[in-house]
Each structure stands twice: as structure tokens, then as C-alpha cells.
Image 1 (cartoon, each protein chain N blue to C red):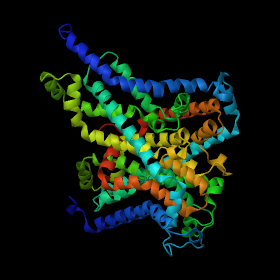
Image 2: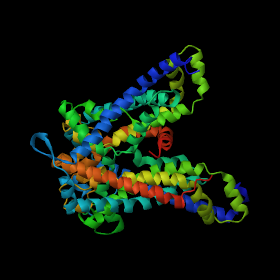
Image 3: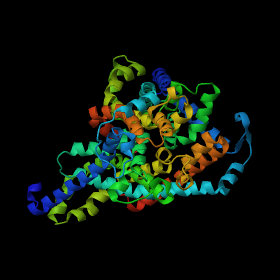
Length: 279
Length: 295
């Protein structure tokens, strides 16, 4: 195709394309580089004017300070449990509901599905105060369950997996019924295993947004041992207001788990988000 | 026919109800009851020990008389104006570049997408440091001496820059999937007609990607009208520029969970939802002028 294009014009366009992409990439990466470089500087070096680019001597104590002022081990576990809890709930409940809405006939289906759609359009902040009051009334704030609570069911997951089930031909479900499966068995044994890529996308979507959530964890768990990485970091900011090397070290600790997962499953992350996109 | 199948149909119906029950019950408890409670709360006064009392539209009157509230509303709209158009245009540019025949495409895409997998709390932290007025690298690079985060004008700009930087990759990935669905034959025909690259962009790419662009735009506008975490991390509650920067959701957080005025905070959140609703409806009406659905 491109062979027919003029050579001169094409190479100029190519150079501009690469130049733009590379400049953009530098801007995207620089904050991360700066985070790492700052985390390796001593406090006094970090405030030198003009700033040094590379640390003169790598200063690893910042990581120790960050570790002693925040219980990162617990933050990792809390965040992992919150993400895992929300992901499992989203997959289990949304798969069941998504299958029923896509493949089964029942009374009230349209009305109930409208409840799902309307919830999707409402910003989560409108639920925050009453959700907090509910937990507070039964004494369940300050717990892992509290972190998972708003994600116990997922309207978006239901909508998204319904699409996935609608994409599976009806004949497959009917064949399962002929083999003597009831609706639950057809779902569990035959159709559910066919939704793997949608489940993967929903998992990534749910995990990324749960991990980024700040307001809810900040509100519901004030005990430092029950915070998530995000809300813990907000607390660290209050402690080390001006000691940026320690703050950068803490931020790195908070970013590492998701970054590692991203580096391993990069394609799944991006495609999963593209698939769930537009939410 | 209907009668013959009734036993099977009843069993199907029973299974369906069982399978939607967790989600529906969850939505009612977690979302629909709270929705009603928030609305009721917005017409109530919070008293000591968390008790509430109906007080009519007093919260709304207080709110509409509060300069802080109007400032926060303007800040939110202004933030949206600053971030959404620029962010979407840059994201479209990145998507178009990535859609060209480039080597290392996956790598570029992964780099632009990076901020998406980092918690906004961590991202804001490093940007705070980069925007630091005394020792920040941004002042050093550009040879300027700006107190970015303690000046009302530049603090908003700084937050907007971080927001745009964070969202480009995500929006570009969405737009890229729209671009990839455009048939190559359109471009070949245009090339035979001698249309320039720029001409091709405006007469083929833009109209063909407009449905995806619209969805991305709506999503980005809603997100920016709800902005909270980024500004919360960039501008502390003790920062004197707070009133000039705080968004509606930041004000909501402070009223609800710092000051304990849950009734007043509920009025703020109801107002925000209305604002988002109005903006979205305007977008849906406006789309008829520019979104192209005939493929």
C-alpha cells in the first residue's frame, strides 16, 4: 500500500510521527524517573539549588523511613483483600445476573435491568454518606469488609457480562438443556467457561478502579493498620510534608504491585480497559 | 403452547430470579436506598450524635448563599473546561499517531497508558514535588520562579496539567480502538483523489471516529466534574489557595467528613449530580450536530 506513496513525503511524515511519539513518551515517563531519582537522594540533596539530576550517592534510608512510618505490609494485604473481594463479588454475582438477563425469560426482567442501567449512570459519591452510616450503625467501619462494601455488587459488571452472554449463540445453551442440564447447570458448566476474556477484562477494570479509589477508604477506615495504599499515602503526606525523598519512596512502594502486574499482563490490561471502555 | 411449557418456564423463571437476586438486592441496599437517603438528608439538619431533623430547603438556601459553594462550582466547571478539550485533542493526536505504521507501537501504547495503573494518590505526590515552588524540577527546567501550588491561578493550572497527563493514555486507547475500525479502503480512495493527510484526517478520520470520540468525551466530562482525589492530594486543606481550587466533590468531602455537616454535604452532592446531568443532556443534544452514525 505505502509503496505507492512518494518516498520524500512519507519519510518526513514518519520522522514527525516518531518525534511526537518520543517527546510524548518522555513527558509520560519523566515523572516516574524523577520519583525514583528523588527517592534515592538525601533530604539535603533533594533541596539543593540548582537541583542535581542523578543522586550523588544513592541514599536508601528513605525507603526505611517510609517503611517505619507506614505499615506497608498491612497496606499491601488490605489493598489486595479489598481488590480481591471486589473482583470476586463482581465476577460471581455479575456473571449470574448477566447470564439471567441475557438468556432467561422471567417476569420483571425489563424493570430489574432498568435498575442496573440507572445505577450505572449515577456517580458513586451520591451513595457515600448513607453507605458510611449503614456500616457505622452496625459497627462495621474499620474493617476489611468496609473496604469491599461498595463493590459487593457491580451494575457495570452485570451490564458488561450480559453483553458477553448475548454474544454466545442460544444453540449452545439449548444443547445443554437437551442434555438434561437445568438453567443453573447450563450456566455454570457450559456458558460461564466461555466468557473468559470478558471476565479477564472485568477483573482488570474492577481492580484498577478499586486500587485507585481514595475517598471511600479514607472515610471508612481511619485506623492506619486498616488503610489501603492510596489512603495510607495520603496519611504519609501529612507526616512528611516537606521530606519529598521519603514521600517518593513511599509512593514507589504504593505503585510497585500494580506496576509489576501491568508489566506482566500489559496487553490484557490495555485491551481489557479498551473493551470495558466508555463506562 | 404456553401451557405446555409452563413447568419448564416456571423452573426457568425460578432460576432467573435466584440468579439476579444477589445483584438486585445489593443494588437496592447499596445504591437505591442510599440514593433516597441522600436526597432526604439534603433536606435535613445534622444535629449532635448524628441525629437528623427535617429542615426543608434550608441547606439549599444556605448553599446558594455561600460564596464558597459558588466558587467550588465555578472551580469544577473551570477545571472541566481546562482539562477536557485539551486532553481529548491530545489523546486523539496520540491515537492517530499510534494508528500510523510505527515500530514499537505496543511499547508506546504501554508508556502512554502507564498513569492509568498508578493510584492517583501516588501520581499527585510526584507532581506536587515537581511543581514545588522552591526546589521543583519544573521551575528548574523552564528557568522560571513560580509558586505553582500556592498561587490561585497556577494551582488550578498545575492540577489541570496533571489531570490531562493522567488521562491521555486511557482516552487514546479508547479512541485507538475506534480508529482501527475505520476501513483502509476510504484512505486509499482519498489517496487516489489526491487528498492530503490533513484533508484525510478532517474528511475521513474525524467523522468516522466521532461516535467513539463522543463516548470518550462524555466519560471524561463526567469524570472531571467529579474530580476529587487529584486536587485533594495536590492542594492540602491548610493551603490558603484551597477556596480557589477546591472542586465540588472536595467541598463535599470536607463538609461531610471533616466538618460533619452531612445534610449540607448531601445538598452539595445532589447539586453536583444535577450539574453532571445537565451537562450530559446538553452533550447528547449537541452531538446531533457533529457525531456521524452512518457508517
